[in-house]
Image (cartoon, rainbow, N blue to C red; front, side, top):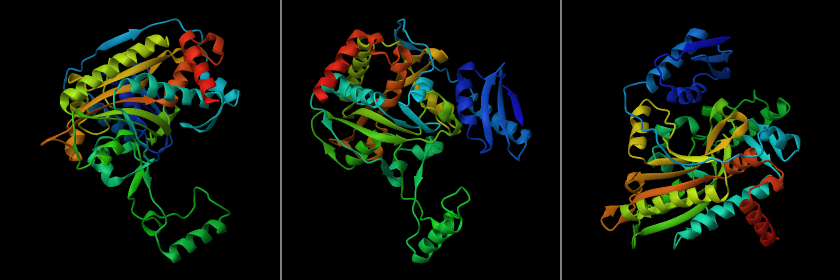
Length: 398
């Protein structure tokens, strides 16, 4: 079945957000596309077209409530002719450089894996290394549910969360489960795994963002001086339903962050420096890109209020790299200011006041995909500065 709903009355700037959110309205959706001023949803839901349409209209109403005056502002553009305009994912797959396990879940092989390591090294040295006193930390890929609760992730991005659980600590449950798997010939979709009967209540989730562990680590501390600068890379996980078929939208990805925690001026000034360093790097590597004011894709009913506040206070910027073959761009880095949200939540003090925080993030896989989408795998076509730095790093890494 196909459900078609008109987008009349919804601002064009919200069409992408609607398409993203529509993937979560029913488990039986096969495909979503925007066409001729309408959203087309192909599905096999037993609820029928009208139920799907009703949920779509609910989302349209959410994303069109009120005129909050979104600020559209491109802060920087670096436009350049790039030599490659083919489907880089298809080429990488054909050459067995990546293995697609399912949409959004990949195995990366050489030379893609080397390119990822080089990019991370470059972000740490060429940007992070310019911040005096920066310390490196290492974080787990899982996070306490209680910690995640303090970040408001459960209420702002509930659709992202991968909960972790395990079989209940009950010998009868464990043995019965094991036997049931043997009985049906191994793990299958119909494996008898009843959440209430078999699974313990989740205490952990997969971590959706690197910086959360930084704030958890500073909980109840009183910081000295102007503040601290921390860098870390972590595996992050966000469930995004059928949106994982979009270019660069991964289920499991690597996020390098440089995190600022301290006094307001300390965080704001370092954030502005990070923006300048990002712009310099985009020019140096000659990637077709732009830096713009952005907002997080809040999923909940107060989307417009939260998104407008972020934009109007310029709390989030994104560096977007062009993907020539689909004539779109994807966010590869973001620069964020959180005010005292996390300082309050984790009781991080600067003297008697709570600290403010900010961060700059780098999606490692996205950077690699976007760069290759512009320049391809033939290194002779790569920008000279990028190629020289990559080869120097390779020699240093031997």
